[in-house]
Image 1 (tube, rainbow, N blue to C red):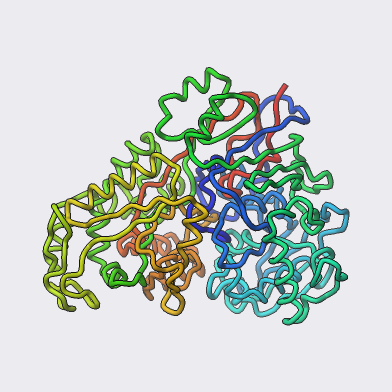
Image 2 (image 1 turned 30 degrees about the horizontal axis):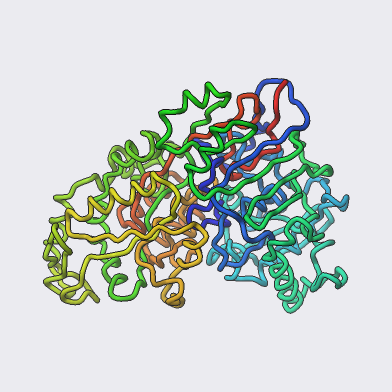
Length: 603
């Protein structure tokens, strides 16, 4: 889900599934469990945060990933990523009937299926050109914007027929990458209903001029931020996905009902999917223990009680997730912290002081990816390089961390705070921009309400203190956290959102190809701390342009070694579902666990 990767963007109760390979292959069927499907019934799904935006093209300033969770079941992407537990494109659920590359992989011809919008109007190539024009108008303000990629790399878009559109690119790409990671992030929007500048205005072709497209974007984004009208605004009643919104409360709870005109192959069986937000894992677990038609996350601290849940009529789904967990460092943090983080040896010392295997055992119930680098080895086993095997490039070693600091001019004080004793840029000095007496004392921001995360941060604070790195912990509700931690860069790092120093962002979900594009390259929208390294930029680019395993391994090894972020264990999830709810597993992780059109109760 590269389109929206804010902190813990889809760290929801249902984002579970692992997958073992990445390609745009054509697996032909979606998974269904055994049992005779029964029409009707409801299920309550528990989520750890609330959405605040409904229009699918969110501004880059909106970092609430749960808004994408709200949108996806109503406006799926052109290319539907994931088929059951397989990390492949799902042609059954995708909106295209054919997608071909030509002209040295610079031209993409897409033929759409003869599907319809919920109001009975056909889905056409004009819907794509409308979407493209709006995205082009938004530019860097689009939350899915990645410098150099769509729409920067588009030379032209044409629509030779109502069912066909052609994208001419400015250069050749690896087709697997472009299909899997770019086209799988672009929805189709209903031009016949949304190409307008006001609620009372008529639908036109405003998007075909730069001024008109900007006006349409401004109108739709204003409407998309009005929570009180999410379920009633006629704009949002026109969908092409399997679900429509029937209710949305001020507390962020919302309900889906089937889109009776859904053209896709898997029509919803359930009558309602109720989405309830919770503030703490304990509160969610209490709801589970009360029983009923509810599904939700089992906190890792409670995994010993799984047999009790099974005895109460639940089935347990346990799988890892396709993403990486990390702690962001703000390379533009004021007060000298940014200069400190810019030193690789500092980041190495910090990583050497994180006992990742211990965290997996103590805070993840022994289940989870060890987090040795940017590619989760439990999910993409075929892509994991030697740098991430075993305990990784940075095994837990306090002595190594202390030696690194001392050799670079720091007076290590395990009982207090380590300070810079040798300022300067020499090989045995603290480094450029670090003043004499500078302290290794930082504040870490993270999401509140999750006991195992509290335990993880407390453990890291204790381990870092062995080298005199003092860590102050600051837990905040998810929405507060993302509102006060912006994406920082050399050109834009306002004090209002870039005064933070360290941020445990939770985990970042990947698309089908885990290239790191957007997370680790300069100017990437999810490169929150503003890390910049030309060599890593080049390696990320090479994964997009070429497809050899050697290219990917070179990227993975270098990113692992350079620590653009501090690697943390990637959690595994345990979810309890009613025993007679079928079609739930294997769950498609790349749809954020939102393929509820497959769920049904069996007789």
